[in-house]
Amino acid sequence: MEWNITHQVLASAWVLAFVLGVAVRKTGFCTLGAVSDWINIGHYGRLGAWGFAIAIAITGVLIMEMTGVVDMSTTLPPYRSSNFMWPRFILGGLMFGVGMTLSSGCGNMTSIRMGGGNIKSIVVFTVMGTWAYIMTKTDFYGLVFHSWIQPLSIDLARFGIESQEISVLLSGMLGIEASATLRWVLAGAVALALFVVILRSEHFRERFDFFLGGGAVGILVVVGWYITGGSIGAEWKEFADFMDQPPVGVAPQSLTFINPTGEWGYWYTQQVQLDPFEILPVQWHLISFGMMVISGVVFGSFAYSVVTKHFHFEWFRSWGDFVNHVIGGTLMGIGGVLSMGCSIGQGVTGVSTMALGSMIALAGIILGSVLTMKVEYYRLVYEEEANIWSALVSSLVDLRLLPKGMRKLEAV
Image (cartoon, rainbow, N blue to C red):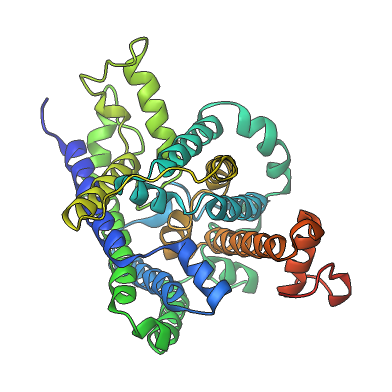
């Protein structure tokens, strides 16, 4: 095998993901944990770590874009697309948020736990990847979702708005010309506000791991953008354009975890053909940046778990636990593809582009997770007295999304 720029990009993805696996395993960075700590015990430390990662990622992308290092107009997925498919961001985000709560972690944490010996996460990964494959490689998305989502979508280009990046949207709404200055001001203001709020939080400052975990995730998202969207990425694209069999997914991109699980499934089906044990020689043109990220995270987590003697096998507690994780994996696979990313892929990487769809997806993910936690808690407290509907309505009242008069159960 001749070493070329594609192998260099894939190796770089694996190395940065290995570092991510070590950092997340060491610090306990977890988007589900962030929501859980906030809702259940009123602690904002891990939520602050998530926000810190977002602030760093926004800052890094802003600097690289304004200095001409990267071009964010052709990203994978197309975060800033002028085709604003808002229903998929809302529905997909909600589905993913519910799914990650039922399956005890997002796509990133599923990979982390696989590296630590958690067999439950292997099941979740398999289910999630199967549904991601179905959503991207079959007619399922077109038949079930696209037929009604596309008519509801907004073609911003019809209004002279070239993308859903916040500064461009605002310029179009105000009837003024989009400018780099406005982008600097808006993205800089968002990042600065996040930094100020988070760094002033006593909960965030009480553990260095919050700073380290959030910082590592944010920086590695920026590094991912630099590798695929900078000079190396430009060389990668030029190389691919002249190949008879170009590699998949050649475009500016960074950390994301749902679509790549489906890509692993597709690679396996193409690699082995009729022999399930035939994995050599590797078809490198089917290996994507995202696939290498997942692999690197798993091995990074595994290495840290072994070195620190925390590697151990874990299985389902009951059939109910198994069913919850399967349902969760299904919702993450479908919802993650629908929303074009997970709590990292949209919640950090996507938001770093300042795309409105990414922000909506992030809000949906958080809301879906919060509602699931509250519904589960109501059903735990009230047992047979609470069905899913009464618990859901009461949870929505708690969040002030429904009037108090609709409450079905006393607040807990």
